[in-house]
Length: 314
Ligand code: TXA
Ligand code: MG
Image (cartoon, rainbow, N blue to C red; front, side, top):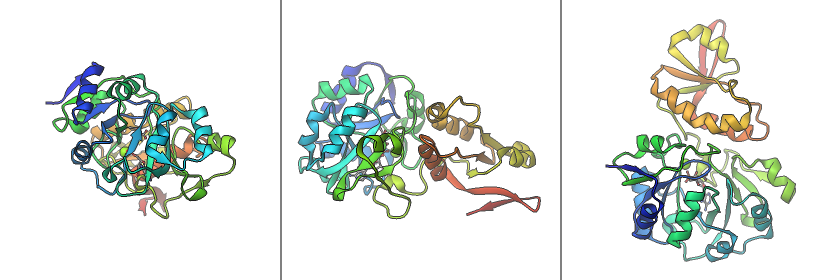
């Protein structure tokens, strides 16, 4: 039986005893384990049914710990950390051997992140170990942003979920690589390209082409109901009527609010069991890049009207 708890000491005990526990972060809920304990980390992969080739992020309490787990860390990492950490950004740097290979899927690099959620920070501090944590969903499914959503994903697979309320950001961290003397965004997130470039100057964006970060796998965040992207949701809805649910992003005040609610909305519409979900993308500016990225990966293709007939493409 999986229990939702608010007691940090229990979560700390689970981590130090080599178990896994779901923990709140400011982005999405994570499924945490002691990153230095191989047997504990294996349990994460098992509970999520996550492919072993998809590396985990290592969460630490502050920048002093970067050198313990990473090496040859460029100055830009510290400059960015000064501005954005604790917060929703992950730095991919060369790894030290203290981090077991299972954490990084055999890669020579490690993703380091300093989360800002106070409960998660307490767990890291009190357990005294770095905590590896992927999002607390079954592999390929929608990331959870509340303890109740974690329960839906992992009920019976884990013992405890530490309830830290609804995540304040709602989409996963921006993943930035510093390997090969280049700075590249591997996954868009709340910290935008523009935010980063203000600190570092021009950077690269790695697009779906080469898979460097498995978070770039095309199908990810998929709801069970097929989702199709459209230029004009009203037009499609007029034709499909009750068969389709519209993921209405226009009702939110701004992109922060879209990010905050995107995964919960998707989950909610998914549970309503429509034949399909249709969604319009944002303009792609700022956090819009991260939102569009999540929508594209959740989608099964595009939908449009051609010669007054509904057509699904791709
Ligand atoms: O906001 C977040 O980042 C959340 C919370 C829990 O911290 N975590 C999260 O973890 O989204 P996960 O495992 O769902 O996504 C981690 C992403 C994956 O796309 C993974 O491939 C990439 O980071 N990643 C981790 N380590 C990497 C490495 N060494 N090299 C390249 N990509 C890496
Ligand atoms: Mg994930």
